[in-house]
Length: 212
Ligand code: MN3
Image (cartoon, rainbow, N blue to C red; front, side, top):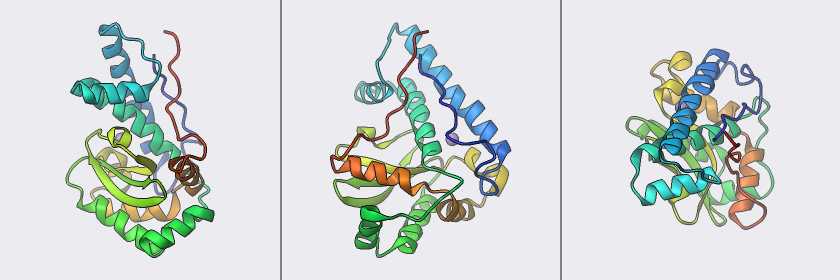
C-alpha cells in the first residue's frame, strides 16, 4: 500500500500565498484520494509493486489510464509539496549559475515559468527540469509527469489545477504563479535535483509502500 506522506512543513507554513484551508483540502482530500484510488486499483489487480516510479512507467507503457492518472497524481503532489518551503532562499551555487546561463537570470526564468503556466490550457503542471546540466521550463497535461520522458529530471513543479489556487486566488492563475515563484520555491530542493540530473546523488523518490 502506498502511503499519503505528511507535508514536509505545517499546514499554515505557506500563508498567505497558499492558505491553511487550501493545504488541508489539497493534501488531506485530493492527494489522499489519488493514493486511496491507486491502492484499490492495485489491490483489485493483485499487484504489490515495490515503488511508485515503476507503477507510473509501467502504466504509461501499457496505456492503463486509470492507474497512470492516480499513480502520477500521487507522485506529482508529493513532489509539489517538496518543491515549496515557507522559508525560501534564493538559488545558489551551480543552480544559480545555470539559471543565469540558460535564462539570463531568475527574473527571466520567472517570466518564462509564469507564461508557461498561464498559457497552459486547463489542468496540469508546470515544471523546471534539467536535461543533464541544461535547464528548461515545460508543462504537462492532467496527471502527466516527467518520469516517462527520457533524460529529464524535474527540479520543481507547480500545480495548475484550479483546486490548487481557487480558494486563495480565484481565477487569477497568473497572480498565484507569480507569488508562488517569488515566495515559495524551495531552491535547495531544486539544487539537490539538479545535482542528481548530473549523476551526483539520487533524485527525489516517492516513499516506499508499506505492507497492508
Ligand atoms: Mn492538486
